[in-house]
Image 1 (tube, rainbow, N blue to C red):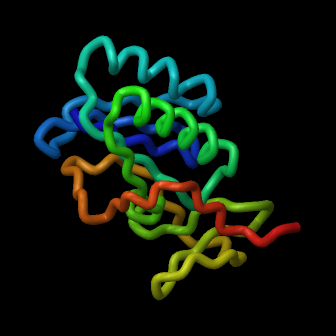
Image 2 (image 1 turned 30 degrees about the horizontal axis):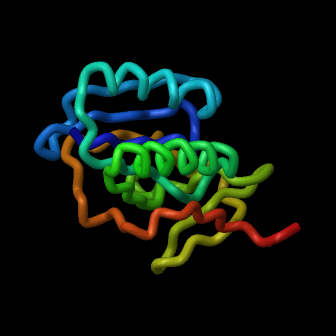
Length: 149
């Protein structure tokens, strides 16, 4: 089974895919460090994991770090590949909350930090019904997308 983790915002979304089709969804609010291990415990009891996919940018730094460390450890221990993609692929290219009133905006292949209009619609993250491998990369390191303060 393939597993997709979207943990850059609440609720945390984890999908189980068989033959690229979503067969089970886990959705829970909370901290990545609390939620991800509990859900993966359930998944490992029911399924043999073959590949791991996750969102590595942009969003909560801590959520990205926690997901990466957890999934990379699992990837090494179980000898299964880990792939990454950006969050804009899972929220209809909608702005993603950053700091304060600023949002990450994806425009012309670049991620920028900007203020948005109050009336701009923010889409929720969604697990795709069909897993599109072409939007993922083996370059799976977290990408933080913010300048140093």
